[in-house]
Amino acid sequence: MTSTPRVNLSDKIRATLEAEIGSGQLPAGSRLDEQALMERFEVSRTPAREALLQLTSAGLVTSVPRHGAVVAGVTLPDYVAMLEILVELEGLAARLSARRMPAEQRAVLRDAAQACETAAQAEDPVAYGEANRRFHEALYDGSRNEVLAKQLRSMRARMGHPRNSVFDRPGRVRQSVAEHRAVLAAVLEGDEDAAHLAMTRHISSGGNVYADTIASMTQPAPAPAPRRRASAKP
Image (cartoon, rainbow, N blue to C red; front, side, top):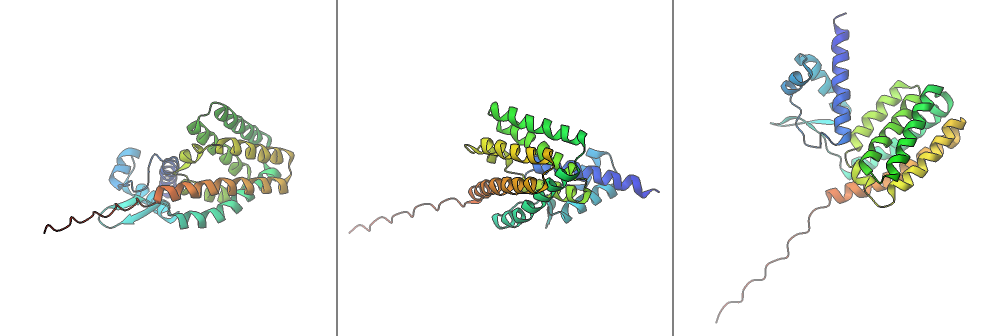
C-alpha cells in the first residue's frame, strides 16, 4: 500500500518536467538535479529518482559524466526517425477519436480548434503553439487509449523544443489552421479514414518545417576566411 503514493508522486514530477521540456522551458542541456527536484516538489529522493528514470527511458533525459541527468537534445537524424513514428501514432489517435470520442471531449476539441483560429487571427505564434498543443492533446484523450496518449505526449515533449520557431515561419500558422479544420470535421463526422488521412498529412506537412528548423539550428557556423600571409620584405 505504501508504494501507490510514491508512484503517483513520480508520475506527477515526470508529467511536469515533460511539459516543461516540450514547451522549451527546460531546453536541451538543462541539468536536472535530484536534490533540487526533491526541494521543488517537496518529496523524498525515491520519487525524484523514479521520475528521472522514466524521463530517461522516454529519451527526454540523458546522463552526462560529471554532470548527472540533463535534458537530451534532438539531432536531425533522431528527429526524422521520430517523425516517421509520430505520423502513424497521431493518425491512429485521430482515427480512434473519430470512433470513440465522447460528446464532452468533442467540445474540448472544438474549443481548442477555436483557440487556434483566434491565435492565428491575432498573428500570435506563441499563443498558437499553446492552442495547437491543446488541440492535439484533446485527440490523444479522445482516442480513449492511455498507452497511446502517454507515448504521444512523451514523443511530442522530446520533439517540441523548436515549436514556437516553427510557427514563426511565414504561412505555417495559416496552413496549420486549415489542416486542423480538416481533422476536426472528420472527427466530428465520425469518419475514421478521413480523420487518419487528414492528420497524417498535417503531421507530415508540419514535420518538414520542423526538420528545416532543426537543421538551421544545428547548422555549423561558416569557417572564418583564411588570413593572407604578409609577403616577406626584400
